[in-house]
Amino acid sequence: MNRLILVMILLGLSSCQSVQPWERGALARPEMQLEVGKLGSALYRQVYFSKEASSGGSEVAGAGCGCN
Amino acid sequence: MKPLLLTVLCSWCMTAFAVKEGDIAPFFSLPILDGVQEVGLADFKGKVIYLDFWASWCGPCRISLPQIVELQAELGTDQFAVIAINLDEQEQDAVRFLRRFPVNYRVLSDSKGQVAEIYQLPGMPSSFVIDRARKITLAHTGFKQGDMRMIRDHIKGLINQDE
Image (cartoon, rainbow over all chains, first blue to last red):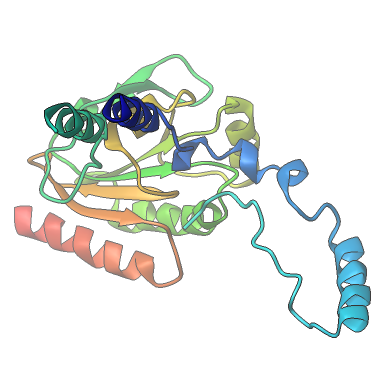
């Protein structure tokens, strides 16, 4: 039974699809970015850093277009 | 144990492989961007080809475009051709982009990504140098300053070698 479940899981994994590099047009749109406005984000970071004393600590990689 | 092994093998078989240097470039035929006429690899027989996959949303593609225009202008059209394949889902995005940044080579539209699928592009932009025997002699992914010098030297070498 356990083996059957394992086989089913492995088969399920093979159906996982990743977004191909040429399909990332939608991800590159401005509305898909984590940061909506640069100015607003800069202000938010300024406040965040001064409150948390953790300069650079809030950085997260953007959604991006997947280029390179 | 056998079903397990079979499952793993099956999953592996489903993975497609990218076209690489030394392979014969797969044939394709696509419509010209904003047009109906179909153009394919076979139409450029006897020429060294620079095949460039790009999209208007791809930052490095925007850097590469003017340099590809220069390359086509420098090497002429007698022995060399640039074929650009645009991968924008909305063709109009590419048309608008090219109105701002016109190019001097053929741009084909692969809005459904069929040729990109065949070539299994590892990233954007991706480009291939194809010699006169339809063999891929250079596969390049991404684009940064200085890359074009290497690509240009490679293409010039191929043109001179075949003369």
